[in-house]
Length: 38
Length: 496
Image 1 (tube, chains in turn brown, green):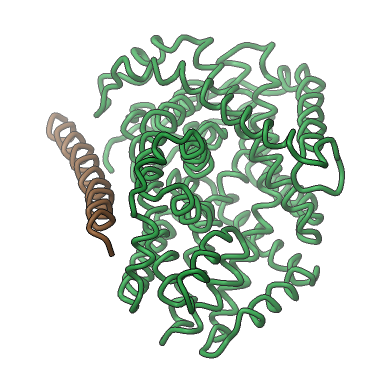
Image 2 (cartoon, chains in turn blue, yellow):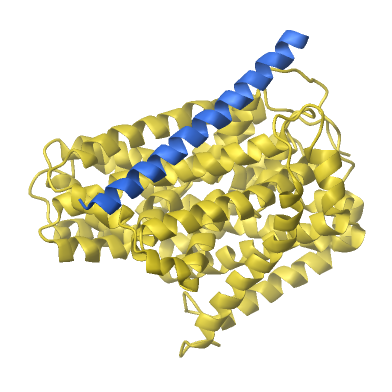
């Protein structure tokens, strides 16, 4: 596997994994904050 | 006339159902081929851009329309855009129902192959000739295709008849995590096969010069459209059952990102498996470019047989296909059910009527691959027109009004910036561009004006579009008076 393809794979899979993590953690934190306010 | 609407029990329940709608067979058998054929890395970039700046705004638009009107596709256009535009909602609903008819047949194929894997069919030594013969015999046997078509729509109907919380939400909360788990197991097995790296190279190798190719962008937007289900009307339907204080932007983002992750995982199963198990790189490339039912039911079925424990992986793979297909079939049925319920029918009667129609109208597709492909193509283009209508609805209502009053609410986790407005104005232009590109390709065909007995021609598309339009216009007055007012759900509570 070429280095370029390997970098691309890491960027794409890593990008989606980090993106999904940030998205879900923001949703959970906001949800929790709202729950605490109640 | 309208009954009080149910609602999803939790945000996670809604997201699971929406992801179930979005992740379908297209993620599994279309995405890997398109990614590989269009330059790997550049396609993945274009496809991510298409998801973020086209699919997410369109999904958000649908969520707003459904949540605001609390009516199915027909009634929502009447109340959101105006009584003169109800025919657009009828078009959107009709295309969804017609897709349901063929999608049930396709779900039946996946179920058949899951049972074949259960019986240990894909064992060592199986050849492409054998898997081709299995596929040909199956599709040439109306008794079998009809049986599995009936099973698919019948089982899905049983879920839909139980309602939103007790049926669709409950089923998707099991189906979606199971689907992801099956894909993860299959991907790990595929990637660890000797020679799998060539498949990864094929998928991710960046041919940067292709980023400037308009073809790559057309295919990326087409994939984003057919994969996320943006602009189809399914989200309008599910949003009707969404809690009033639900985050539109966050949900649209989760659906878009989740769908792309599902497609990537499918790519990590399909391409490494093909390259590891094919006799040569040329043979693997040829197989990868096949795509569609041929790739899945003939080539992959045979390739699974060449690896140790292949039948187990085949079982996991076809079970994942079945879950992906069935969780997409549920909203298709619900589109019909909700529109009928808006006209005063009970859920039970509406579900029985919808699945009976779906079964009967799906019979020709179960008998003939030409008919199946014809409907597959015509309804796919019909969906783009549906997307244009949905964006027209949002623009007519006022994009800024939607952004400020319906999306950026006090209870939202994500605010949409001005970019949402620009993207919303651009979305119909992009959709029109995709339609224009397809028409251009069709005009280059010999049989461009053929109406019957063809799977892909401008004549058959225009003829069927004219029928949809006439149906929409003729029924407009009736639907305007028959459909009741949207009623908000009673219960409102927080929590995932």
